Image (cartoon, rainbow, N blue to C red):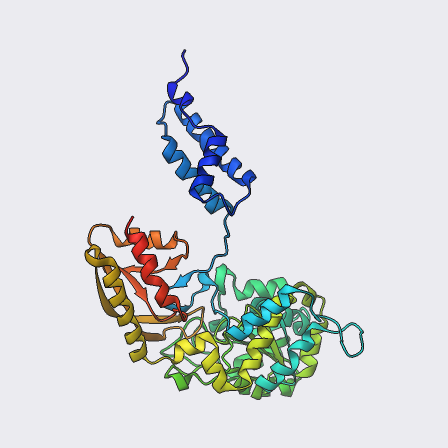
Length: 463
């Protein structure tokens, strides 16, 4: 049987690589990577033809190879513009860092650092020394340190203070973290034994007292930072739990979750327990995240009584969950900013977003819509719409943030197609599709990003 002529017409691997070089996408990538994707694409087309399927034009083969080169070997962790209306978007890395924090990370990454050396003595030091004085100053705790994430901090606290015994926790506080991980699973991994107390909606101090009588070696309270419970409910106050633990010489650990260090009421938001309030109760440990309401890097922060913090720091598990130098640099810079709360409201990006007045968001959305309308011309109808944004990231559940967005209704294409093109662009834009329109919410836009959006939308809409 004669060979299919379409096989002879397939471009060679060298020709595909040369075509990509002429068009530009090969420039940032090694030739070896371009050769690999070119062979893959040609091989797939060849197998398809031999099995009786359709062939492909040289032009489509060039385009597919260039696309694979960018997606397979291009940077994966790319900077994106968050126009979703969610401030702490977990899928987008939660809190953006302040300029002070990013500068600190850059300095720590560019060379060697005094991570674990005492510069005055020349002897080995502790990485925790870089932040403990900041943690105690900001929180009011006796001691503190940080690990790589809050779930790791909880597991460490249970292992160090629970000592494999029973840990009493309210049924209504058996939360699920992100990624499908649940508190009972973290407990089991730490060697602790779960002792559920109370009911799903009502837990009393007597319930915890009964758990102590049954042999509990630790009392754990978990702030419901990622969901709300309302109606016929009753919670035991942390201060009462601390008093009970103190009377029985049993440690009390409070998993605060989102780690608020300022009074959010100043921004007109619902009340959220602060780290300082939790520490003031005398709890042995208070644990919270660094990358949520605190607005810093991913970290699990542990503050509290000196003895309890010391037990955690000395536990073998502390090595497995220790924080790295870049996160440590960002965390130190973020904490330093909180030494002056007014400065924190100005410099921490998420606090600045939360504090912005709705009228300011409306002005920004109006300016964005006006520019987009000029850029798009008759290709789309652009208007300003009110939106209900979210804090996100497992913080302030049920809290809606009044915001505004530029709503784009394409004349020919579907808005979902434009949303896909924006995600695939040189600077990806994460937008939403609502009521048959592409919605660009200004709530979480960082300085300068509003000026970038018109050119990104205009260039992609022109395809």
